[in-house]
Image (cartoon, rainbow, N blue to C red; front, top):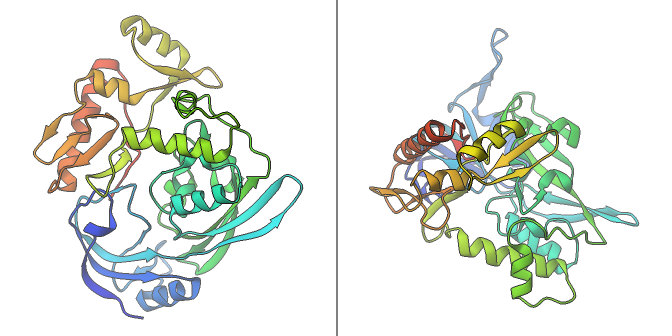
Length: 349
């Protein structure tokens, strides 16, 4: 199996950042992955915790939609192209669907909509691959991936074993999971099994979904209607990565104690926040960024989108470091004005 050298990753990341992988290969099944790992592994030293690799560290690449590359990768980039959608079992209320990690997320959502399998319609048009969804615990319009997650299979690079990982093991949080922390860079997600519903439970009270459905003059609501409404809203607010480089929302919405929010509300009456459980409030990061004057800002080819302040963009030839520097400036200004520290949602590589 051929490992290529000095491959541009510009077409493989939605920011369109020009960086190069010193070594690159793709795999479409477990056996190909095992063969590639065997090729690059030299030995495992007893005194070390990590495997010594002949081609440097391994980086697993999916759709490149939640990544900001800041430099060339001096290692081996393995692109996950495992495909397949399979209904593995069902009961009175649910369908259990196993999906290859390399499947396009929106293709999977469309597949479900066509069959009236409910649960992921609010997650329409989120860029990326299925394998990245549990890593990030993707979410939108009142729904998170963990609500439809059953389990996943993942290959441990060092032990060269496949593990089935349950929802409890994933330790899902807000745009977070064990794969971004404890298990970071240790596993390759092979497939994800979803628990979808035969009878829809509509989530239309979040954001502008209700208004969009009214505009669409929907009478007998279906999951296809919800999906279409979400797609309309996202398309109107978020730039298409095929036209302008971006990775969607760059920052997380910060979660703070309710008493801190009440104080902020006194100082900044317009500040936006949604109450959560356990006395917490989720702030709208976009409102704070816009209030600091960043919306529509551009410096060279790095900028803050003119319609959605959460989205940083590459107008053509920005480097990853230029976009990272811009994010640092935004975070500093929000911290200085509101006393709130923003956290990046995008992975910095």
